[in-house]
Length: 347
Ligand SMILES: Nc1ncnc2c1ncn2[C@@H]1O[C@H](COP(=O)(O)OP(=O)(O)OP(=O)(O)O)[C@@H](O)[C@H]1O
Ligand SMILES: [Mg+2]
Image (cartoon, rainbow, N blue to C red; front, top):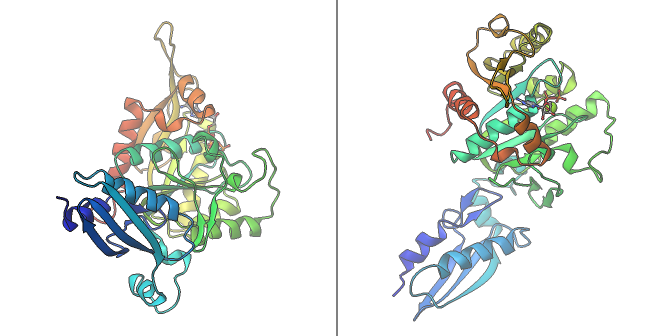
């Protein structure tokens, strides 16, 4: 005989994807009746035309049906009163998008130089953190060369919810926002002046429903232009992670990005050397294609790891499957990242 307690417990697994909290915690369960294996209840959503209502209903049905002794589940969807909603969000006025967001640690991935692997490193860190169970988001702050959606194989445009823009999710549930998801065609050019770029970045922070995140990784474009400046100046980032390659030229340009962060009082949390070596797949010989490392000359911040040049990574990125790529080096990278950016909320 199924009990109310069991049903409540099963429903704690049903998450409102927009708020990242479960339906019991959100006090959505109403009028629960159990009659000889037939279960009937109402779920009061935070808003009547919640775009995720079908998903929540489906998940709730599946969770309850999975319990032993349940024959049938009847769910009625309703909406909370404004007063209940305000109580839930501790507000006297209707909630704003930013009220739904609780971002533990925002970290920018930067490098003065283009093409060194910032986006790849951002994606690999996000994937590794998500695999460990952290709630992760990626904000693509590169407006003119956005590559994050492609790496994760995302194409669908974000849904517009009543509380803001709902970022699409990757296979592992990483929430992604990028200008490329808003364009009619992936190869459409974005020709915007600095103030517009800054405004869009602020909107990505303020008007996207990120929900509760442990980590928001911000992929910066190369250089020290408006986009990096806006991110470091106006968003509450904990600090930056620098990405470089062994080439001396790279070190010189990457130092500029480091200086910019320091001038804006944002600490350099760590540095990652990408494309450090190439190991020939045929003979196993190690080649330093970009010469010896200069990483110590860039910053005193800890070296989080070195990634070799791996053609497999390029292939998987092109296929939109970066999340599946995992090596000893990427695992180490994530481990070292967690040391310098410890999980928030004591997790
Ligand atoms: N370790 C690696 N092994 C093999 N290919 C790599 C590696 N890191 C990056 N790449 C490839 O190098 C190219 C540049 O990488 P990526 O886009 O991550 O750099 P970026 O610094 O973000 O570039 P941009 O400055 O244009 O934003 C991509 O084609 C990517 O697939
Ligand atoms: Mg990039």
